[in-house]
Length: 238
Image: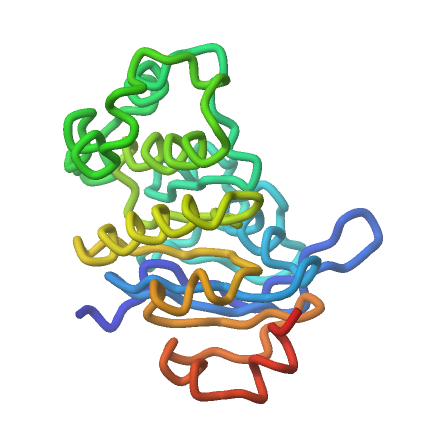
């Protein structure tokens, strides 16, 4: 595995108006890792994801993608550089069919990668294929989440960003999405997941970073987090 991170975040300060939300946030994700960014509601997880994508510009610090700075770029340029973002509210094209959503999003990766096709999506997300002609706005919440992930993969990103993928979903659907993300990890995909649900990530992620009140307070392998009762109780227990 390469020692060079896919994404490197250094000393990010982010404000909403006059209120500072992130304080010197730093993290990195290496090729093939699934990193869980964990924290309670309001800890700064979503703001970190938006800052990486250029949706919440940082006042200080930088974001490096494969060794090149993407700080200050517009979100669509960041997407073209290889980041795929699944936001908390999914933002599917609700008036289009499932397959239309996939086809609209299809593009090669920044170096011509063309690993994801409609056929491969249906192979990995078999629940979507029978729904291929259904209008996306009529899908259940879990089906919409699967579609949002699949649609983002159609852009062949080098790093997949998932913001709260388990939020508001029934436990059986959360389990199914966990299995799908496990398949992605097994295929060598690089993923950063922002999650409040620690248990969703424990069997899925390879590494964990914990954020609290806009600051990174812990970073380790997922096995080290499992063994650290103090960190889990102090920052992640609900």
